[in-house]
Length: 163
Image (cartoon, rainbow, N blue to C red; front, side, top):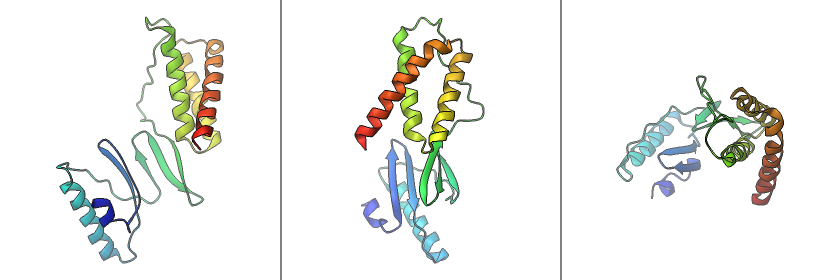
C-alpha cells in the first residue's frame, strides 16, 4: 500500500477528495531524499488513475485549501487563507432568503474560524473582519451580535466536546 511503503517519510497524510496534505520527513542525504520523494510522486500518480500536481516542498509555510499552515514553536499553526481579490459577497438583509440563512451563515463561519485558527488573537481578528463584512453588506451590527454570541458559545461547546 502507498502509505505503508512511505510510512518512514510521511509524518502526516490527509486527503480531502482531490487534495492531499502530506508532511514529508526528508532524508538527511539530499540525493536519497530526492529519489524517495520522486518515488512517492510516481506511486501517487499510479494510484487509482489520478494524476496529481505537486507543489514544491516548503519549510516556512504553505497554503492548503482555505488554510495557511506554518510551524511556530515546533507546533503546526493555522489561520484562514483568503485570496487577495476575495469579494466576500454575503447575502444582504434584504435578500429573499429566509432569516435562518443568515443565522446559518454566521454559525458555520464562526465554527470554521474557531476550528481553523490556532491563535486566539487571530480568531478575534477574523471574527471582527467577518462581522464588518456582513455590516458592509447592509446587516445591522446590533442584530448580528446576538447571532455571533450564540455562534461562539455553540462553537466553543462543540470544540470542547470533541477534544
